[in-house]
Length: 185
Image (cartoon, rainbow, N blue to C red):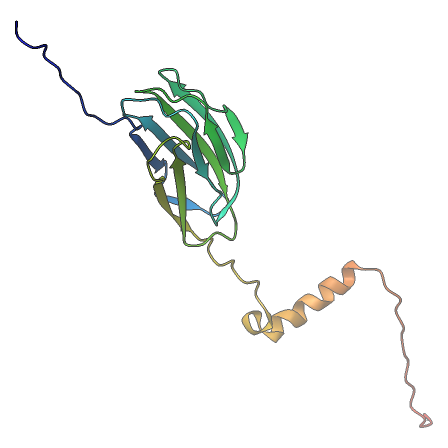
């Protein structure tokens, strides 16, 4: 009788996490709104439960709201405001979590807003944190048109306007009469 055949399979027993981040605009105006999409996928052969996603508010963003949706049995917090700091309680093989971030751009934003998201596997994983980022140019507001001053209108124009302005406001008037001290004959 032939000896039994044995075989062993070697493979990855760690999650294979992927993260991507996109922005809906390449250029945004100060005071405008930009939408980021952050996608986390477990493409490995074991679950990645307990994976933490961090997405701090970058310089140039005044405020943000976010939601997340899942597929293939993944579970996330659902909704939040401010920075994302979410523990994905369930991220099965083939599962994904998609965060949609709606951000309000600050009026003092820099010329480019770089938004970086990071995922860190749970303590049992041996993967290093992964990052993804999206950079968006900020269209700075144009310089306001200056109000014309004396040098632009000229003193003559101002002198013409003064009587009109004075006539609009009630005031006390004094009339001075001057007489000559000479005698008239």
